[in-house]
Image (cartoon, rainbow, N blue to C red; front, side, top):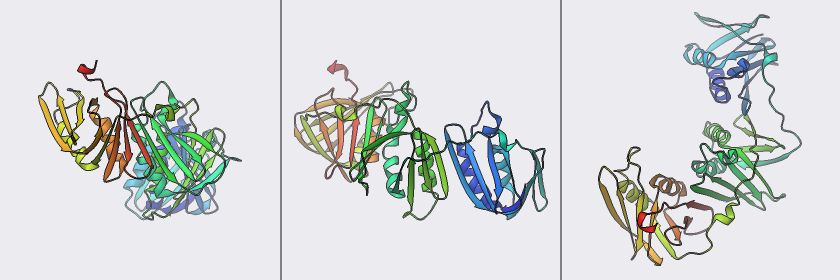
Length: 372
């Protein structure tokens, strides 16, 4: 194999696919980047057996072939080469020689035959989504995905497609995030769960291009999904298992309704949280009454109290929350004002838009001692 290409182009492609490479694997080839040179094109792949990222870049291919090179070493070399072009060639022993001006590296590679085969996603469902819309929906739900859970299905985001609508849902046992947007879809109802790691990579590659008007093409198979974005393909397994019936967790009754300026509420919680640290974990106590929210926290460090105005209808409620969970939900709203629905001190809080229905955030309360 032998090819000549632009250093920056190859470096950017390898840096991106490297995010799907195993840091440590029982399969040595899975720690590398697969490079195939054919028809003046380099096909570049990273795959950790759960998620794969591949792309193609132009190169002057003088001898076709393929090889697997250690991802970390290759990316560091490409990042530090000062010249605009480089030459990579390899022999039958899989010794790769990288030259650029006076810079020369010799690296032992791995046979391309040892590289794990990426799953194919064929004969399934396909849809085109606005790149900016999907990225925004993911960023406003992914915070509520379970980081580590005995039920793996909660480490992903659930997609639901129905007539003209896309829903993204995430839960972690303490909170839930639902984002709903209108899209041009009128096929059969369908749902699937994508690992949060995969969606993180989709968002990163979506943002790699300045053009916000691009699209993401989603291809769904029985066990895997592929996202085509910005010249990259992200292939991932789907998560299998029974997802919570999230609709049944949304309280049907409301005793208290609140309308408040979102940023004012965030600022007040942040002020009241200043005495809460990782060592002094505590909750925020909120009293909703008389068109005001009074917040307080008490830790070993001391105490904090704050009060802000709000439009409140209904019964007085005193309720406790994990400050971070409440802040995450409010920051994800993206609206100047929010509507809050409460039903006593032990029922979940609902955070909704004041107009429309494009998001629902649910946060479970923490019992105050006086409430049992």
